[in-house]
Amino acid sequence: MELFNAFVVSLQAVWADSGFSAFEAGNGIMILVGLVLLYMAIVKEFEPLLLGPIAFGCILANFPRTGFLEEPGLMQAIHYGIANEIFPPLIFLGIGAMTDFGPLLARPVTLLLGAAAQIGVFVALVGAMLLGFNVQEAGAIGIIGGADGPTAIYLSIQMAPHLLGAIAVAAYSYMSLVPLIQPPVMKLLTTQKEREVTMEQLRPVTKFERVCFPIVAAIIISLLLPPIASLLGCLMLGNLFRESGVMDRLSDTAQNSLCNIVTIFLATGTGMTMNAHDFLVPQTLLIIGLGLVAFIAGTAGGVIFGKIMCRVSGWKINPLIGSAGVSAVPMAARVSQVVGMKSKPGNYLLMHAMGPNVAGVIGTAVAAGTMLAMLK
Image 1 (tube, rainbow, N blue to C red):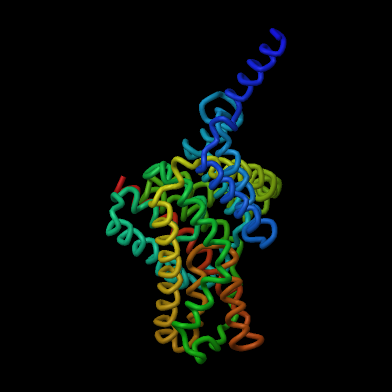
Image 2: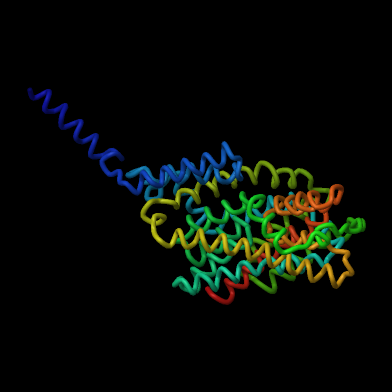
């Protein structure tokens, strides 16, 4: 009998220490959310390299009593890398090594399209303030409109860390839904004649221009907006690796091994912030809704400015490339190409759209730096 009682006491102790005893309905809901995100990543292939780790991190975050973020270990180290702004600049290093700024240098005027697409950031900022968010929270929410996940995380950590999970999920989800969200907006705002505009071939860009651009851009932007010096500095350093012609090993590491490793840590750590207590609040739905508004507004802003440039240039610029200014590289540029090809078979817009697309990367970072300088 004593042996049986001891066995029962042991079972009770195991149960009391298990996650099952502390499991709540909110944990179950968030695990289901994580499973839905996994479905989107694996089955639907919506940004699988990002949504996959985020989804699994969400599931892990909702196991009670794991002590992931309270006790020293891998998960705490990953959280440290996010909270102290280590991972986003490293991601930008890889992005820089993978980015060809040639189309932007060949037609610098497309920088204006990247800037125009940032209107979505400020539309969402104003909308968030009208819905009761404070100015720092509104700024962090607004950056979703730039469709740049690392920048959204970077700004959220500094201005509204408690909203990081919702903002990151909204940003990456809408990035993955670019082919679904953008085409209706693009077709609504343009005429058949505008969509059929054929653009002249881009001029060749010299190696001197390619090497000088990251150096000059890093100097000017870092002096103008010091809060984003780490982001833009790493972006331009990675691009210098690519364009110099003498740092191929560094370029290969930045755009492959390093970028893949940091993506795993950044995405998983972001998912780890999606615990039921912080995520299952009315604010989350508002953030997701505002993110959609921001994304649509950014797409519309780029297209509308593209229409203006089309007229000013004498019908030499296809306004569809303005939608690529939202910064989702290179997916947004591919959408411009697809919509253009459907309107006029053989009308290749991809390289032309890459100009505003890479300009959008810079534009979103500049918008983030502006908000950090003004609102933090």
